[in-house]
Amino acid sequence: MAIRRLLPGVFALCLGALLARGLALSLGVNNLLLAIALGVVATNVVGMPARLEPGIGTHKLWLGAGIVLMGASISVETVLEVGGRVFLVVIAVATLTLIVVELLARNVFGLAERLGSLLAAGASICGVSAVVAVAGAVSAREEQVAYAAATVLLFDAITIAVYPIVGDLLALPSTVFGIWAGVSMFSTGPVVAVGFAHSEVAGQWATMTKLSRNALIGVVVLAYASYYARAGDGDTPSVRTLWAEFPKFVVGFLALAAVSSLGVFSTAQQASLEHAYNWLFLLAFVGLGTEIQLGELRQTGVMPAFVVLLSLLIASSLSLLILLVLF
Amino acid sequence: MSIDGWRPTAETVTGRWSALERDWKSVIVGGAIVALVSALELQIPW
Image (cartoon, rainbow over all chains, first blue to last red):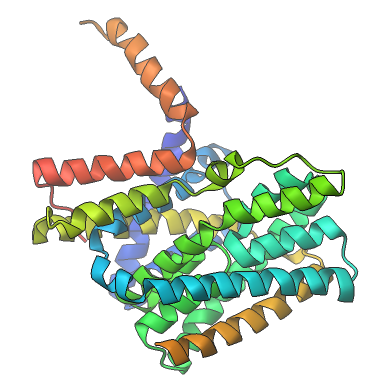
């Protein structure tokens, strides 16, 4: 039975989460970053037994469930107050990143057109998920998908380490740090981890900002599919693509935020839901750590990595400046 | 009902679960936790 296949890996994730929590409490370090570190060590130093892989692969499911539960802790009033400005920043930075990567990839570094598009989608929207979604729409070759995905994962690993340091050095306020991580880092998992490692408020803003950025994936896939279909070598796009690519856990997150704002949960229930999503994030981040395979990252091409690094530096510094002015 | 009697139901449930998109699975897991916490006043420690 399929569930039996998942049990060993899920048990390993639970064990890793308990260990991360225990060590974090005794060492006084952040439990989410420690969970990622445990995953990295487990896969790169100890090695991952094949029978754990199916269960460990469920880590994105737990991340999504944690994000849904986070809806119960969101202050809808605050979101309505500053949400419009944040969404404008999200659209501006995503568009800027996409254009910068496309221009650098095609005109400066001479990368293949499709590889440039995959990197642009991964950097501007939601990391590897965007790479895979756009790859299907533009009929990219397998090695281009692997190359782009490895580049995005390389920067996920780098930003997990660098963003908290920059946040501390510049003493960024929680709201600014959270939105900055959400608007400029690549994949959802690292954004949530880095946000909550800074503070609860930063974590909530990082997640909400990243969710609104992820919601743009349908539009980007549709745009790329239209572009390559016109060139005569891609799949014909349809409006259904918008819904097919939409991250559905956002629906759960919004529904729970709406229910919670009606005041249906007691303080004790809200605390329990908050604890539940903290545990789910720990499970997810142990699994996320196992995806950072240093051997594979070393195989990333220099040119694609350089293109993404330049666009990250531009988008990251520009968005930070805008956020410091706005908030 | 014997265990054999439950088997088709269990197989239908696991079949439907497997066919679901991962994001919807996340929504169901989240919803199940909310239901447990609300209905049973479940206290989750941290």
